[in-house]
Picture 1: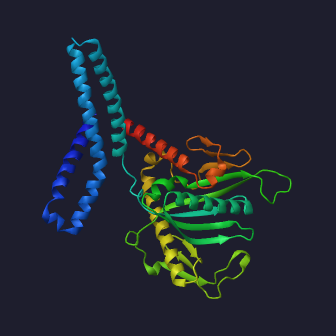
Picture 2: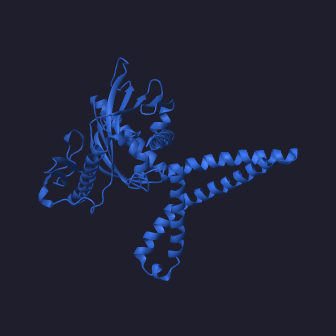
Picture 3: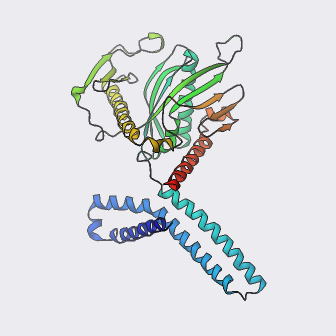
Length: 361
């Protein structure tokens, strides 16, 4: 506890130092330095405010305890002091928990925009249809949060399903909420093509990649094999008579990215490179995570695409997230983008696991 309180005292000293620096004309005149210090100041603000609230509650608790220890209080005043002792103790406990959450190591990718890739898995056309349903679900969820989506590439089937689709989500904190969607999503329902009413089980794979900046992932043009071809729609019908579709192969890793959504070859190449950079960034981070696998095992969302994370059971109207054992009987709302309850529960569980792991160290 002493280390915890000492850490917070140091944070407050730094916050006060930043307050003085940000009023220094020399700092104000250096726009780059000023911007960096202001960002740090804003990041520390909520933590310092919570710390000061904790200290205020601690002071009230100490005063109430001293009064009770002194004795000689009349009945009414003693009752009021006892209530203050109880209230301040509860406030201290609440602020301490908030402070521990604020001091947890942050995922460096949490504030990034993301690229989401959805692919039909086992189940043929039914899997492709559900992949399309998940794409609709995520775009509706993103709209609720006020973020923006951009389609990067889509491969549709003749029956209106989606073999695979990739799209970006631009919004502050997009990765912090969408990262828990990585994994295998299982659907149980009666397909429209099923004449005997039998329930089929299909799977769809979702990958959520933090979007990489160009400066973060340097790609040597000599490492790329770029092919162009005519973009086509479902069933092989050509929708563009020019070779505007792009296929990029990253030779050192074997990663292949295709994009045919735009009529412009240049735009397709730009989108494909965005996806490739993000996949390479993810690959690099997975290699780093492998070195700290014990830390990953303590987290709710490992991001493992082979892990079955959720089941959507349409006959029973329920959605179950297997990582935290959460079942909701509102499948229609969820498919219309109402993911907040699931995401909030996953974030809370993840934080609880990190606090537990922190307490064990």
